[in-house]
Image (tube, rainbow, N blue to C red; front, side, top):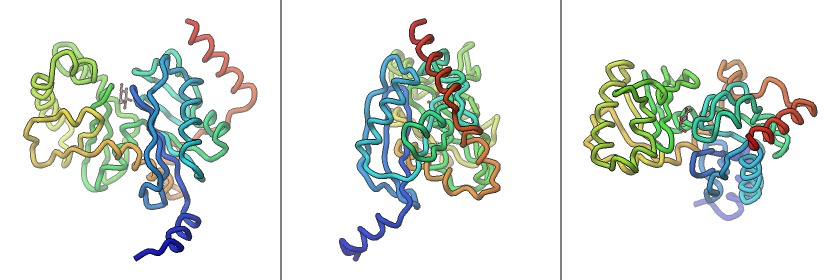
Length: 277
Ligand code: BGC
């Protein structure tokens, strides 16, 4: 049995990762040890409205304060993000976020190294086995997706925005808003159809379903489909820090350049402008 002293020694020695999950309704944070085990209780603050880069960054700093000490930071972002820079943010406001270097901004604010990827990609790292073709979908405010081939990610796969049926996308047919409107029964029937279509197209060996609304899944799932706890979205954050130095994934999750004073001022003024507009 671990004594208090050995627990304290472990806490001192282990590299602590602050894992952040930015969602459409809540922003969550937890500190993980090197193996990805939680060291703190998960913190959650509702996503600010409007969810501008400034407001979200501020919320993350507040959450970080409540989590104690950490050495590095992982972020799951609900949109396309490459090299730290946001390309889309459908449920926060792409107009507010496009071009914002989230990794640089958080590195400056939190004074620790930061890595970031799409939220479904992070969730995927927390769910997969690392073998064969594994697909992850997340059912929350948006419809997230991540595809892994023998544990290697295809970054920023946006299946959610692909037309599914009746000229509507997976997100329009299965996202959080429509679930409220059509109810659980119809939503589950749609989900069942979506699983079949996705299998026909991607031929996955396993499908993991995460996200806050996976609680609403009542249909009998095929054997190769499982529900994963929403906490995978935070636990997957450890994966970025386990990549070998020559892993190509490193290029996707880190900022190419740390923001300079000028580009920081520019993105802040962009942020203000888009908040006004
Ligand atoms: C975004 C995805 C994201 C998903 C879940 C979608 O609207 O396009 O990037 O993974 O929502 O947050």
